Image 1 (cartoon, one colour):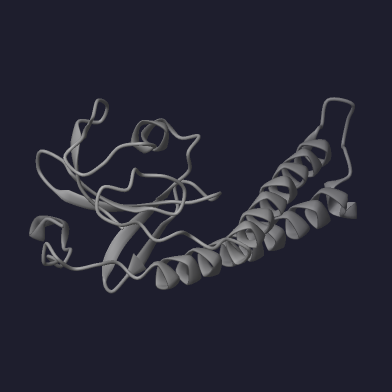
Image 2: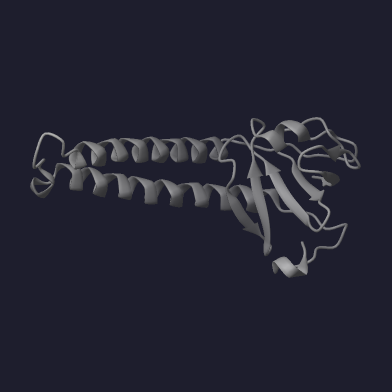
Length: 168
């Protein structure tokens, strides 16, 4: 990681703890569920409160609050499903020359920094911290995740431009 980004440098031969990444990801997804679920409940309560009663036929605050609550509830459900996927996920070990697949921890070198990614079954976009180093969760459905599947150290991604430094 770049010192300018405030990330600690790791030795080239260091490894990332997959169990810690999985645990941090589950914790992040549970926290996301709790936050979304709580906000959904509060939004629905506000939308159904007597104070929110429509003051005219064009007053749609209550309807909008309930639509928002529905969307938040769907997102909360997705976070819960993602956490469950990680609870049942056993990532494989990757040896030298093993192509990147689901469960890989990948170090990519960009022009100005090096970053760590975990290719997981769900929860893409979440960033967790492992041993003080940020790890971004990718899914195989994401643009970068699709590119990484099957790559090995030394291969390069097209967009964004990066070189695969290690696969664990």
